Image (cartoon, rainbow, N blue to C red; front, top):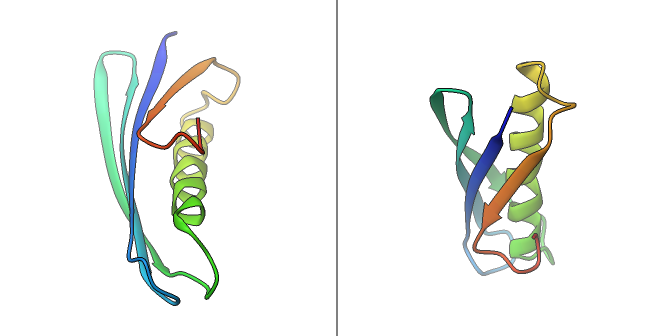
Length: 82
């Protein structure tokens, strides 16, 4: 099965800022869209924290759907993440 995830994150750039993510997961015939709030990010964290939390959410969703062994392509605007 072809699986693609399109991930986007947002982070308020200050210590203790808020972070969020959103993704669209294409696995089979139905697209699946999720957005999540990471929360207040620990002081000294960067946008990378939010990016990894978003990626973790994608992988957890795949595992919940029994797709953890399928190959996946991740699309993100983050050069750090992908």
